[in-house]
Length: 205
Image 1 (cartoon, rainbow, N blue to C red):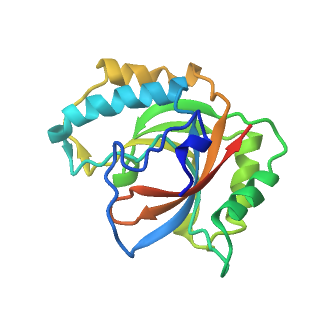
Image 2: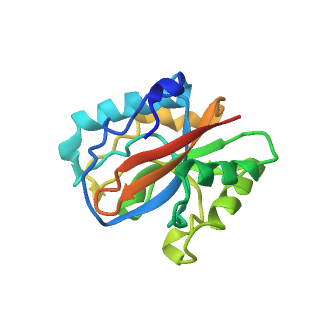
Image 3: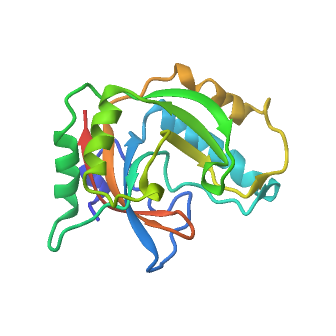
């Protein structure tokens, strides 16, 4: 794992706030994450503190390891291939300026999309995702049809929080710009807990 000291804008989030469990049942995924000092990160931290204090009101709740947009899952590594070479290959395909736009806060129908923020498709996002798909297993489970940023994993939400301050914080996220720098990460994701261990990262601009 690369030291967070190499990235002054990004704190190592492998152990906070999610819990990383050891397991042989994992998949490699490509994430885009914001800078630790960004407005997105600050809103996410505020939301997760609130969610942890209301854990009993989410059935079987887990929190993402970090705020992220998943580009692809099931990344195949060739024998001897380094993590950073995978990331550099994907980043080399981006020709548009880095721009991610958010939609609405939403409640989904699956455990891993229980509470999330919609992400609109932009040229840069499409370029990175297309490059990531070239390295992924061609199975339906690895396709990210609609990009999103997950906030809470849970079997169900047992209360309505539409007017609470943390939820309102993310309800207005569509007006927030994705700030540079941002980071492309290769993450080993536990299929059971969906918590991620960062294998390597590079900076995107």
